[in-house]
Amino acid sequence: MAKRSSIFFAGLAAGAVLTAGAARAANYEFLAAPATDLNRVFRLDKATGEIGACQYGLTDEGSIGVTICYKSGEGAGPQAPSEYGLVASRHEREGGVFRVDLRTGAMSICYVLKQAVVCTPPNK
Image (cartoon, helix red, strand yellow):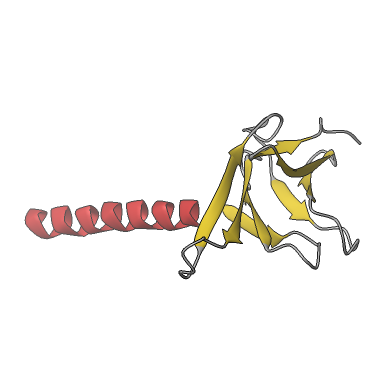
């Protein structure tokens, strides 16, 4: 009977690890820039507020193209632990998005500048 209990608890522990991994896997939010002529998508870590972006790029060879990604730059790195979200304006030529702190109401504008995503200081 002790052997069965050990197997049962080992199974529970493995299930808890898998569940925790699945919870971490859903920690990102994605949002396209509102600009109608821009194929850029922003990626937000909902727990840390860190933001990056990727877009499609053409190659000179005429192949299928490449994914161009921009790292977190000034103001776009991890913020104070909280709960963050992304909001797009309705401005059809806006290339950036709002990073919002859902707990405090603070907002930043984030956009690509010189090969990196940058964000303004948070403000309410």
